[in-house]
Image (cartoon, helix red, strand yellow):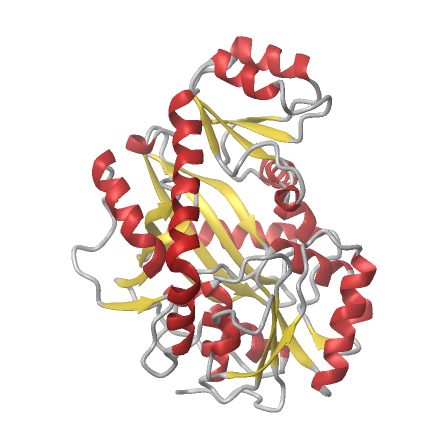
Length: 412
């Protein structure tokens, strides 16, 4: 491998909320741990998949909801930093963690290494409204959207809208409290929208967005790491083949596909807004007008980041650790054609996509290699722990996710 990481600087996986079956955190532990970097993680309990990885030095058991006061979370991180005993690179796995770290970088900087991102930028990017406003400001294509402030606004929107439309929670963090909708919800009729909206309260915390038809669209992803000057040190593009819930959830199956146009679009936007750190973007290519439309901006590593690695062995987490420890980040072409599979959700996704007849034209006919989210021959316990925790409650949860998505798509 053409680089040497600083093995004196550990990494700490930071996650807030109760989602123990998170393959992204396991991937980050393995990615840096295989290089000899000491790895630590915040976990819900001692028996999460991440806590069982052979590459983890120690799991700090700290159950959180993600709705705690920021001061409490910062104090908890500083306590963990003191227990580690030396500066560590923070690797957030959710928006709550990424926003907290950015907004309290001064306090956390005494114990940790973090990208010098503008204090309020991650919160704005994680917000559907904030992201839409930034896209409009900088000329980045995005779906047409409305942000109703009352039920009357929704009625006015419904009278003019072309259905179906999509409803999403306006702020990323509301999923921890009382979300108005369960993720991305497709609404087919005016009556369906007004019926749902009656439960959204006086100040609806939703965004209403144009629907991009599946048969006329392709789902693309961009993962990258940007330095303090907003210059990409690692940039990757890929196409999403399947997600769960279908067409609206987390990536279940994806391929690396070279897309210079998409990479240029992402790099230009990041330079314009001055972001630094890891990004995970979801875009939809609209064949009707030939535009890539930005749907989601995650100011942190994405759960499927291990899909992407360049020929020098660099992924976005490794790029961040190298950069924040003063190492150079070696360049290299991405491993085109590589495939990523999340074992516990790709099978139900495959069955759902076969029923719908949906295909992804840009997916290679044959993979050049496959990265599994959970199973690894050199680190089998996370996979076995995932199976033990997933089989019964996981199957029930998958069914509930599918039913929620199905009702949103069909009943309205």
